[in-house]
Length: 242
Image (cartoon, rainbow, N blue to C red):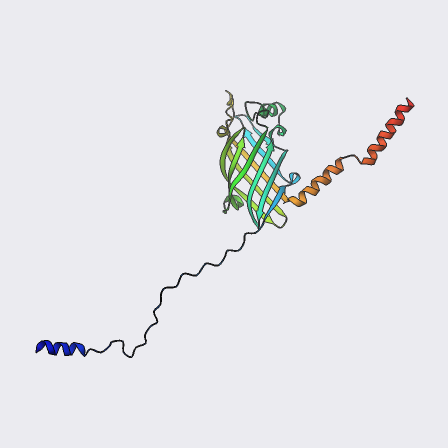
């Protein structure tokens, strides 16, 4: 009897959801595809304007410091939008100048840069990162510096700007010459310091604009065709006169 009454009571429980709003239940939809990234800005090639650029070093020994200038160099820069993506330099070592003729010759021989064996020094960036730093630096540059045939990864701060048709950059940092196999100690009473300061400043223009400018400079240095012919004619007449 008790079981019958219990069964009747259980069967009388009302639907708790009666009169309530039923939610719509569906399978979880797939996540929407992310919007496509905008295409990267096309890269532009720039060429360093040598007349507006410089590469210098400062070395020292116990008794004096010596500035070193590298006047013959070339460089290229790749820019996307207003961001410098890569840069590369080649320096002709044999053209270096310094403040003392004897020292200049010594720097070029096997004790130091060994220019006959390693005529070119170079730098090629691996990564350029926007990173504000000391003394107005805007970027950190990492890349491979090859000096005297030895390549090392170097990282240094630089101030770089890219605006329109002009790219400028400047940097100053210290390297240890021993890292590049330059081990000459100097005289016992006048030892050469290991640290060398490198100072680089450059301005670059679009490659398409730089090429005509270079060609124009070459044409200005060449003798006009007519003048050459005129000279040849005069020389011929002089020969006949003799």
